[in-house]
Length: 270
Image (cartoon, one colour):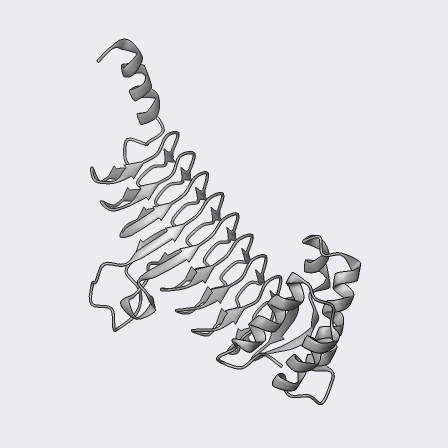
């Protein structure tokens, strides 16, 4: 080995603390930092630029993208808390630029759920949150401290789940929706709305979230009309969908709202 290769090897290895336990089968990208007493399993892949704090455990068939940051005590990719799970091969995929705070737990999938848990890009998962098996999370989601997702939950882009909330299995949370703190969510939450309570009920449109995500005033007005049609009329869901389809201006946001309602399996929060 020439001097240049020796130097590069030293630089790379200097990012891994001497007390960390890294299985030889793990794939560690360039400029990854791994803190004291962390454990990285055999089938784990970690993308370049990712920072892993102390006492973090990452196991199973887990793939992390680039530039993620995982804080102390997080447990990533361990087997699901599902009594039907029999040790079969299953996966966890985490994208890029995510922040996973202290003692969060994220489990890989099960055979019944397609075998995969997926988390997209640019998400903030705060301390003590739980993402159960087979959950599907989009991008730019915020989960506040101790928010908990049961199995098979789907959360769309830019949604916010406030602290100490519990989301029932198979529930879907729509794009730019917000779940208030301490909520119990047992039905689907349509895009753009705010829900709160135990069980959660709809309290209005998530106006702050729409503004933060750059939704124009004109489009916000269309979403307001859709909301009134669904929640402030005597129409049932099917009738409301038909009326919105006929009367509202076509846009990607309104089409997404209608598509979400048409695909609701558990009913929606009212």
